[in-house]
Length: 351
Ligand code: PMP
Image 1: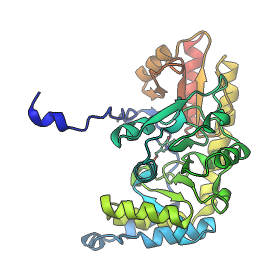
Image 2 (image 1 turned 180 degrees about the vertical axis):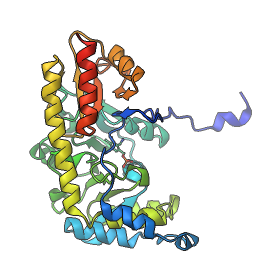
Image 3 (image 1 turned 60 degrees about the vertical axis):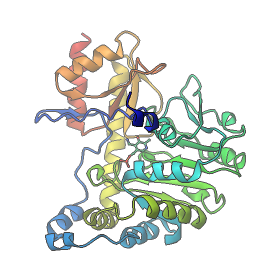
Image 4 (image 1 turned 30 degrees about the vertical axis):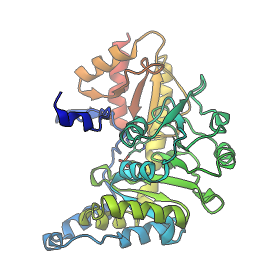
């Protein structure tokens, strides 16, 4: 080992979901939206002139922050934006989880939480989900250095009722509680209404899922002006200017088309419910997902073999080689045609 390597900050990196690139693929592995972004966004892309790219973007991302504030009925001091909700969450970990006490999050959850905790030297303790893959609120009442969980949870899709979130908040007034709402638009109830009451609550959302803009990397957080100010202070110290001009312009644009957003989201929910019925008829088991994916298992067909058989056909779903969930597949909800292709394949495979 070289002398300088003694001082290297070693982390276990996040293994990103597969990003295959085949013309004929059915991509149901990273929870993207199967529909294009709103028509206004497509038009705006053509309008954005290259000349604009000569200039730095607005550091405070004013148009996007104001657009979000107006859309969600908030003051702009209650809104923070970043490069995807990953960036927002990482910034929040860095800013708010700064005590010697462990941060609490579920044992089965978004895989980036322990990566950031490792990167920033934040102690953490995972709380097991129950056997229905639900978060057990009482596990979060113990002394801690902060709380974070997705709602609905990922990769299970299970929702934690708002009343339980409020119970967790009431037991955690001295630390920051982050509710990661990446999938909130597909049927679960948002904790946004609680931010006026709890100044330690940070609600994090994204344009990557329901708004169909994963490629632009736009995430945001809602919270008390105090929380948002601390986040901005951290952001301007570490990564100011990182939201680029096209993202800022197109992000502000996507908020203008509420009807399209509601229509495509309703379509995905309807396809999810139909797919559930088809998969149940094939003997699959799953919980009540409130996300744009299903988390499924089959008593007779091991998940890994199914994953590999699907992959051969260029149908990509997600398999996690992790304890407790290594017999499950996470299947993103695509278009009706894509789900039909998946079901047709499974039906033939299981004959
Ligand atoms: N939180 C959860 C629970 C997620 O599943 C994801 C997407 N993989 C993210 C946050 C990050 O999404 P993005 O950075 O695209 O906003």
